[in-house]
Image (tube, rainbow, N blue to C red; front, top):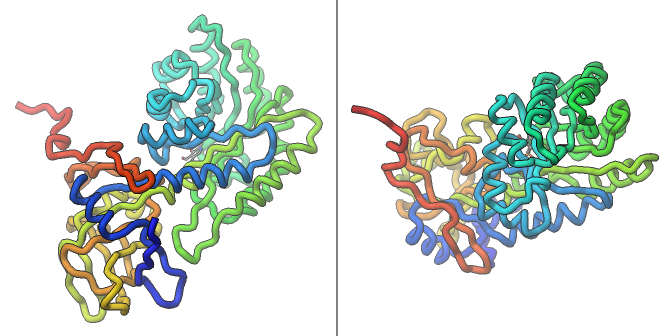
Length: 411
Ligand SMILES: Cc1ncc(COP(=O)(O)O)c(C=O)c1O
């Protein structure tokens, strides 16, 4: 791939455009604007990087598809030998379509209804990390009534305020004896502990410092066999941002788990860290205006395609291909095609002077991008395209206006 530098700022590391302007134009011409473009090589590289860093021998990596449920992308993880992490039955449904064996699927979610629990057991999802005693009791009851010869692995999601903070998720260690009794009464055993740090944590020490107390807590489960150390690993969206140190994390986990007397299996379920870098959102400049020194760029996309920015805040690098004649960069707001007051894709960016029809790329939108997109503001959703060695293929069709009517009923 060509690595053409954008002229974002002269003082910091420059974000690079991942392919040529000709390719960007070709993609927009074929698939429409805006369009999410995924690069398979980036996914493969990230899979390798994470897999290689996690050196503890009994490690199972499961991609957290809450971040991205595109079946063609899930297949890349499946083919690389990863399992799948599901937050919901919908995650499982998509995972099964992608070819994951249900035994490779780990569920750690919240508040399944009885019907959903029946569906999950019917699919024979291999591993359940439960959020409450009530969910454990429900699973036990449904499992006993389903006459299945398959037995799921069971774990508890951990709520330990000194580590997990003020969280609604999980079971407190004081509840472990009751949980063990509930599992036993359903002729099941509790063999796992699941820890989730919270999404987007860049500091590696926020994970490494809690390995010991989590292991100590897990040892309170007499049948402890696996530790699910969750997801939540950060991604450096800013060029100068701190990257999560997978090697340090992998070494620390290996050292601590290898020195235990019992052999414990490890599950890691990265979402954002595994797929954030894989995609950019290509869009076109629709209008340009200046407010004093500031450039206000109107684009043909909106935060409905990148909801995470208005819901959770955050930052994405924005690149353009206009770098030759005007090397000067300007303070720029990149705005969506609505008047919603939070419809900013980038605030106070540094971009060259742009013209109507120019192309921009919003980087690192692979995680919580399309997955959080919606029909809010009533525009059809864009296509998704996978780029492999300069070859592109459609992996989700662009919607037309009929998508806005789907499932509506009127007279
Ligand atoms: C239990 C669990 N595991 C993994 C993830 C993925 O998190 P991240 O994308 O921060 O790695 C989530 C996200 O909600 C989650 O709830």
